[in-house]
Length: 307
Image (cartoon, rainbow, N blue to C red; front, side, top):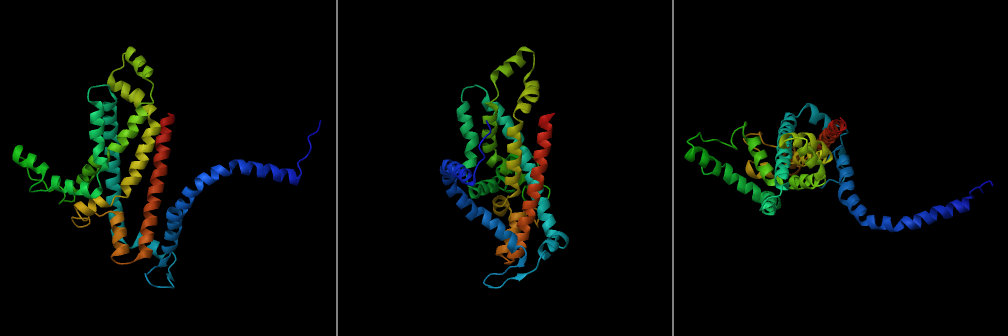
């Protein structure tokens, strides 16, 4: 028996019925979408617009400059490339160290031993500190005269006194080390959650087959937590590319410009020199770099997971 063709009226009733069923779902997400549009989407769009102007405060009619801010950023501003290099070096160093260290700690505290919960709490505690507190603590530790590190190196082991935050070679690694101590608790918990999804039967079967701890880690654990690894690596890189508080408090960008980061340069450009158009171009440039590197990370880690 041939089906009766849908009339416009019946089609409208069908669509309205589906909309009524889905309406509560849309109402639930409406507050979040409103806040997302107000505090994230609109600033992004407005920042892109401002980057095309020589934007100044208290001026009603702004002077458009087109892509001049971007041309100057890419071709005539050596400090941009310097701070981008510093930021990328810090982000790669910190994200790599954080990922490796937090994974090893997560594997260790996943084991069943007395006091396991105590160590989980202790390892996570630094995460709850503010960046100001962490920066002040790190300053005391890395102080060349009275710092804790140089006390052991110089007074206990009779080694040389090291200017941890005073030389171009050591300042970024020192900032990275302090940041790893401060932030590794979060990726540790993420890895711990990922490790707990691996069935224990797989490890028992590997143990029966004669696999040792190292072989088990590389042949079972790492392949099965690839999605977790992808999440940690990407989020760590994005987070540390936006580093601001640590170098501002610990070194103020010194010595010279050796620890000045992109966000410090952006902040100074906007709120010291009031060049809001150029500062917006810096923000767009940083966002483009993070997006490109993140896509490369997704592609690399996904291709490795498929092998």
